[in-house]
Length: 127
Figure (cartoon, rainbow, N blue to C red):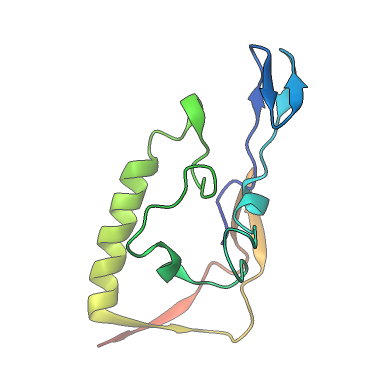
């Protein structure tokens, strides 16, 4: 729901056509990752936290881009996903996560990245 970087930028270096639009070198393209992840035609109820959307299927290359894309895609992306799967699997097997507030976590910023506004505080209980 909340990519760390809400957008990325790429500079056009060779002329090309994009969906009927001709782009020349020097044009700056800025894909807004935040909006791509909220496309209702791709993700029904796009603002709902539904991680099961990805169970048993690989997300579309151009519809889920949390680490950017193309040649400048984050090199640490695959490792970050592996690390998150391992840590979360272990934690979910042993702990129960209880939110500390009923309201959605507000957004915060740290430099150019988006972060949880209250630090994503939870209470952990042993299972």
